[in-house]
Length: 352
Ligand code: AMP
Ligand code: MG
Image (cartoon, rainbow, N blue to C red; front, side):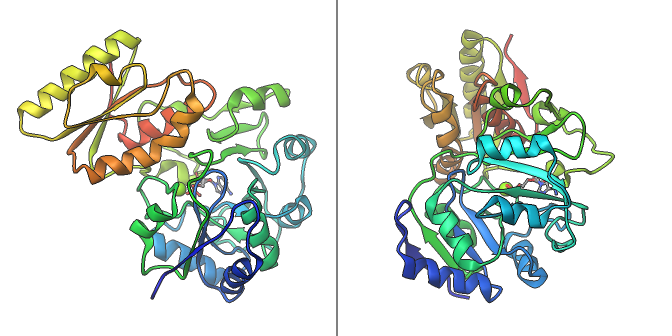
């Protein structure tokens, strides 16, 4: 299969290009497209054969459910059995935007889309070009991140090409994404509502909108938690990992810097090539084969935006090991730490 790459303006999308992409979705094909979070790999969410192609193209485990992207609230309501008051409130406050709601699925949604669950995850994305594609397709679009399963999520069309060239029909290229980590996933089928995955909408904002909301234990897990009841099976799969082995160092700032350099020196002595994932404040204090910065520790939104791109850049540097500084788990930092811990396979070292 030849994969076509088509440039498109994210704010004023060229309608002929959107129509070409929508035509592929309607015929059951696969289109990678930008959202405000990361690039998604889309198919008609109501067409089981089309959705099956997503799992094949990504090598995605079949029990990992896929988020369904809609262009309006009405469309979300058709896909769900009921929309409780707290879900409406979240839609009012955060849609369109990086927030996904897990609700009881209606009979319209094929089980392959929900990974066999009786719930569906829905989101209305905040980017004009994405909304235009969904509307023009005339169907909700099922889309996980447009990477091979287990790899860092793509924040540029080039990242998508690296993973999926020859495996999908089209990549719409609207430049780098704004948020850089995936949407926050909130399960509204339990009481109190639970955050299954931290993402673009911070926990703090959800707490100030809902009376009650809590973090599922996996969100900040320091090790693999066996999920007895697989409510969100996606949570159990290995994720976000570059080719290099990742080590995360957590603790007080100064202790982190000392420990990171110590680990880097140790591994370089054994002949390994080592990358350090630093921050603006600490970058100049390190010596390694490659030192890259997430940006200032005071700007965790920029850390989120840069994270996946930097993990891929370390692979281009061909480092064997990445030693990463932890950032504070506040605001978008919670999503960054969740991704880093998973990328490391929970290889976490405490510095103090
Ligand atoms: P991604 O691979 O980035 O699309 O991840 C989608 C995330 O949403 C995964 O963690 C899924 O487990 C979660 N998700 C999608 N659909 C559902 C659902 N119906 N119930 C619970 N979690 C879901
Ligand atoms: Mg993903």
